[in-house]
Length: 165
Image 1: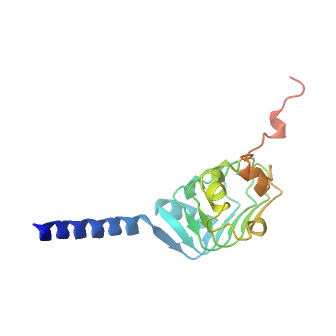
Image 2: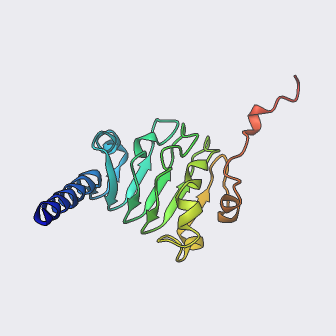
């Protein structure tokens, strides 16, 4: 009887390990804009390398919905249609710098609030040197780390105001 329970416990432990391993898929090498659909369809949770999103045609980053970790740098730049970082809600760790530059329609960083800003900056893996690691420049809205921590993660587009209505 005791042996049966031990075997059952062993089977459950092994099964849980296999499920966890299958759920955590790693993209090996740099992830470029041209590979984003392959990345999304593969349900990857981690990138062993850099993420470079340039001249992307999407309004958000929902292709990254499963992403939890990037061992290198993240660069999101020169995306004329990007309005939101939606899709990065599960990102918890960035090993290098996090650059968000030259995205003229980007006004919402709220996706970063769930994990990266609320837990990462306050003490997990990205906290060391975060001020030097994260840069926002030449976007529709360029929040500081302090603004993001204080939940000021988005801004209204100026053109949305109507002064002659």
